[in-house]
Structures are given as C-alpha cells and as structure tokens.
Image (cartoon, rainbow, N blue to C red; front, side, top):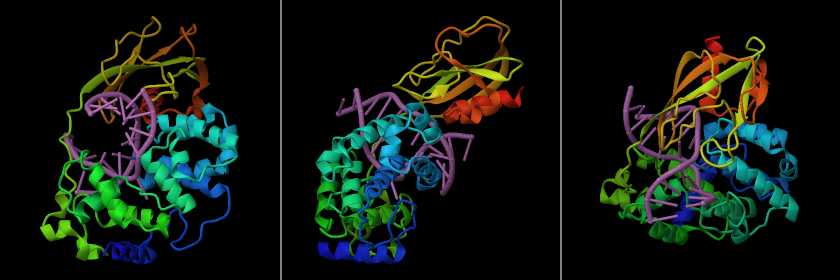
Length: 347
DNA sequence: AAAACGTGGGT
DNA sequence: TACCCAAGTTT
C-alpha cells in the first residue's frame, strides 16, 4: 500500500517533472562530480521560503560568478551580499559564505544528513534535501509542500505546528530507499502544482485514490494552520546624502545581524520592526522631503520617508561615498533600492 | 518556544 | 486592496 504510493508518485514524476536549472531529469543517475552537491545546496538555500521564479535568475548569476564551492568560499562577503540583494532573508547569504568556507576547508560537502545538518544555514529540511537529492540518501524531506501533501494524504487534522511530528512520521512511511532525490522533488512538485493550498487539482493527482483527506471531503482545509498575528505599521526615514552635485551618495553597511543585516544601505533614523525611527537626520541642514516608500516585511509594514541633502561635509560614522551612476551595483536590498529610485526620480 | 527574518506573485 | 504564503533557520 505505502510502496504503491511512492511508486505511483515516481511514475507521475517521470512524466511530469518540472525542468529546473538545478535539477537532473527524472531517473538520471547522480553525477560523480563535486559541483553537483554545490548546485543542489545553493539552490536549496535560495529556495528557502522563496519561489522558484524568484530563485532562477539568482541561481544563474551565482553559478556564473562562482561555479564551485571553492570559488564561492574565496569570494568576499561584500560581493556575495551584493549578489544576494533582492532575494531576501539575508542571514541566508551570511550563512552561505560561512558554509562555503567550512566545506572548502574540509575538501567538499559531507554526504550524510547528520554532517550536513551541522553546517551553517542547513536546518532539518535542507540537510535532508541535500542528502537525498545530491547524494541519493533515503532522508525524510519535509517542507511546506510535503506537509500539505502528507496532511491530506493521511487526513492529519491536528493543527500546525503541533502536527509536524505526526506528519514527519507519516512521510517516513512512504519514503523509498531508492530514488530518494526524485521522490523528494516529486512530493514538492506535486504540492506546488497539484496538491496546492487553495484549490487542489485532485482530478490530476496520482495519489487521489489513496488520499484520506479527499475521501473525508475537504482536502483543502488541511493542514490546519494556527491563526495569524496582526502585523504592526511602522514609520522610518532614510537619508539620501549627496556631494559633487548629486553624483555621489553616502552609503553605510548595516550591522551583521537583524533586519537587512550586513547589507549596504542608505543611512536611516533607526526604525525597526519593533519601533518607529527617531526621524533625526545624521547631519544638520536644509533637508528636502522627496516622498515615501511603502514596504511590507513578514512581521511589520513600513512607511519609509526619504529625505535628501546636498552636503559639504562628511556624515559622522562609518560609510562610503558611492557613485550614483553605479547605484545598481551597490547591492541594496529592495527597500533601499526603492528609496534610491525615489531619490533619483525626484532629482 | 515563539519571534525574527524579505520579497514578489497569486487571488 | 489586502492578505496569503513559498523548497526554513536561528536564537
């Protein structure tokens, strides 16, 4: 019974697998090549909480700039952070570099789930995914897609996150010894294309006959999720400080932890997800209000006012003058890229 | 254990 | 428009 589930799913995958830049076609043996685990790992980290469409151009750029884990390990933090700009969850990029250096140091990626799990930025999901997809290990790979598919398949009604243990145990019963990587990716393809959150396409599902959630009537209500918290509204100010008739702008590097940590940015008034900014500019002067940018984070919505000043002196603290013509290469996170766009439009 | 941590696309 | 949420990890 459970064996027939994995067999049905793999048959479906053989016919319906998505063609993705980091993926082998179904059934193709694992390459005996050190760059293969690197590409799997890189794609998995990029895909954490991030859509396939968003990842594609970043994966292409990273693999062109740094074709191997050794190349990435040798890159500067600044270059990697700048290349990650716009993808979000920047702690991933900070951990990416740490992980690359650790892996280069030990001479390649480890092949076991436990060793992978000990690397920076690899949690339960990513360690299992790399073990299965890069090394063919029969690891139990559970992401949000698998949670949804399994909760429905076995009609697990307990609410998340409490249901995770039961979901994982159920997932383990259908994980095959062979083609573990294909199986993991098949579950994720099924979850993203067929067993979708809102309107599952049960008529196209290779597991419909076995699905207890479908039998029970309302597969779309599973898995049961906890109520969502309200997202606070915050206000802050960013400062566009120029010299040389607006040809250079003052940029800072944000602290290594916290929001947009380690990213180059415009100076601001200390706003955070927890509190509004002070509004206080870093320099006295005749500031011009250029407008505001609205930006949604996971746990706060921000209105960022943008003020501009052509300055004689240097602002206090660490920072650098950056050619405005090259602002696109500064590696600004989307929030500050929008603020910069506003400044350039109003200049 | 709960909260922090980005962004863009879909509905 | 507003809300949802996607191949999660860290503290």
